[in-house]
Image (cartoon, rainbow, N blue to C red; front, top):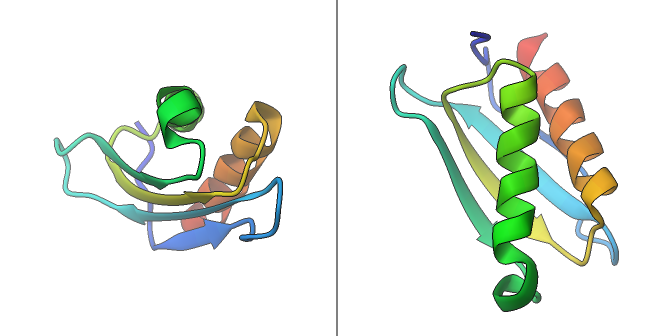
Length: 90
């Protein structure tokens, strides 16, 4: 398990991008995702799934994520989460 050291963010609120802001959570709290997206009804669950799967792939089990989506594709979401995790670990 990897523990986040500090809050971090990556991305922007430009069209076709996503702003990911993540912060450490208490051990055992799990991953909490707060998502704002104009496509929430259609793609909200998919976006949350990509965020959670990416965090788990990096060994993150406890985090609070605020995501502001502007139509990002899955590979963009994954890249933004990976960058935010990298920044939170250094």
